[in-house]
Image (cartoon, rainbow, N blue to C red; front, side, top):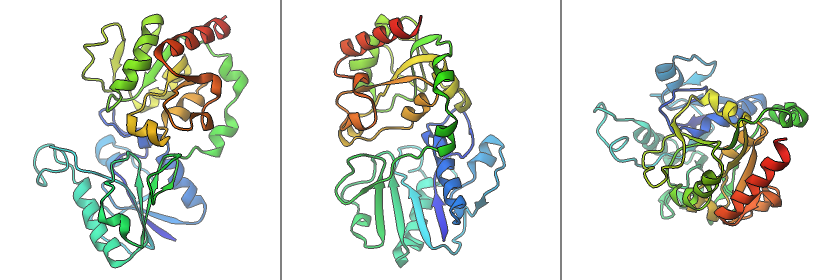
Length: 305
């Protein structure tokens, strides 16, 4: 099968100034599809080459409409002053315009289409949901009505080569770390991370956090290269799965879970996360900031000896 794949991001490490969380799992999915005998042609701009200077061995058709059997979209939505502005104006990105072209050309003619709503931004009243040739997927344990789960994949080789003994033997410089951006996470951060950070001086937060005045005790270090994410988790004892409310309610875990686990960093999960027990051991589920603080302190006493 020849699959036309639309995404706005990177397959490699990309650049620092980007919110693209798909780098942790996108190439895993693509390589698995190719390994299964499918051909992939990418239909958005090659940002790896254009912005990061990285050439990768894939097929790109960012401006045309090649013959394909299925269209798969990592869903893009309107972002003010970015992809809603006229083409070629300062700061404009053409991801939304290109997605509209692809939908009109392929989906409008009845081609099987997969919409992967990875950020829960696909409107519930979008007419695409009613089209017979469209399948909506969400990275959630409890997707929206009519949608089906498509969780972020982890490569079998990553699981097979992870050595628990070696991971537990590592020195853990930090007791608590979070790597990720602020978007929609203030409530979860206030309830869980801020109290735990107050009790654990050896902590840090990496990512784009622009409104932090209410947490003067928290160490924010800004964005880091994608290649450094595993390194930070590999030197930290714990992390807290900070999620927007829409993710908590639907049981949608981000890539931060397997990034942390594969580095031997223990993931503490908020109890509000729906069906948390399906992804995280019960002893690592916390119902309050105080409980998270006590849990991390107990782990530090037990593990950091």
